[in-house]
Image (tube, rainbow, N blue to C red; front, side, top):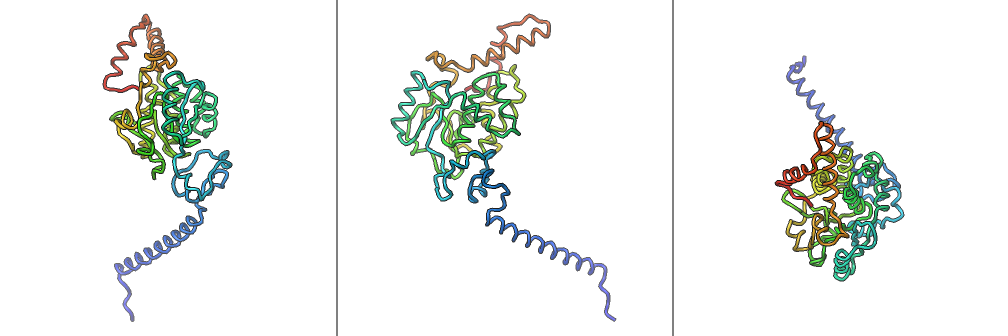
Length: 329
């Protein structure tokens, strides 16, 4: 009579059969995955929802809402669709840039003849916000922003997200040829720089259309914009400005390609910055005045609720305290 296997032997035999079964299932799953990957059918969206080639589907760059973009897409065989378009955008209230911004624009046109430039105004900005996915609630947030500068901060991201290219502030002057330092064909498909030791620069950046890191920032703006605390002097910076730009980029994993010196004077020149425009030409009123007025309003309302006499001068002390250890645009 043959000896029956011991309980220990039966246990080892059972484990072996279990391992073989798991390996077989994994092998079949891998083969099915590979077949789908190769055919591009992993993405269940049709071309109207996802107007890119299978090469794009595996890149991780997925547009939130591209259903109206299919007619403008480049062909699958055109490598230009994987480069940052050679076009730049500015956000302004009219086509009249004013004395100083017009001079910087002339410098760019003269030294970068292959870089087209366009001014984007309020109506187009809002239409882009309306075009962004409804699930984010961006349009309502955009319309409810207390300051225009917050809409401008949002619009610059939407413009590059939907069109691809470079955004630059009105007071960014030309210094060096873009061909010497700006990588239109960067493998990351995005070019950003550092503004401070903590924050990235949101006054000059470039990316391809539908870049996920731009979507990351826009989504964060929609999230933070639902509850704007205008009693905090940093509310613009934190809701739509460099702080949110930086947090969104970091959440996406986009590292800066340029350091602070590159962005301030070496490659381009940020001439005035938002705060100093008003000291040069009244055409360019500083957003900080509107911000201070909003903070002052909230502080006076708080004093009234407490039964205290509103003190307009309180914002001066509040401002000095808030600016300690921080950098405003």
